[in-house]
Length: 148
Image 1 (cartoon, rainbow, N blue to C red):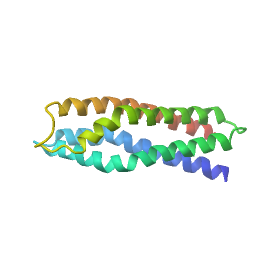
Image 2: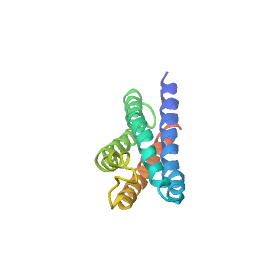
Image 3: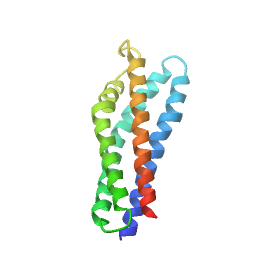
Image 4: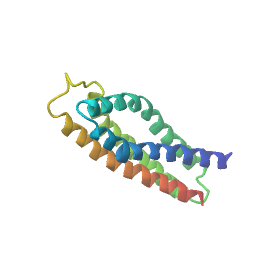
């Protein structure tokens, strides 16, 4: 059962990393290259869609990591799992304090109602997102290392 917990946690966190990496380095670049208002509308739609899903994924990843840390306290790699869970806490706090407020505004924007500084706000979200991606990649790496 413990082995299943390790694998499920690693896969769930790994998939989350893949989605967020894709948003940072692929989707945002595609959306930014679209003509006229299409990119901004795409960002708003992505904010609505992923904004509904990602909180559960982040919290679920954190919960699974915490369960692994507690259940595997006396197993090899427990310190790595605890550190990974700590990094996932950092990612959740970053999300709530820095990224979600911008996303909540962005998801309601249309070409008719967006603020004059909408591009700057999306750029700020992107910079915070790069840091968050680095944090969750580090957490994923620690979970993978704990498997060995």
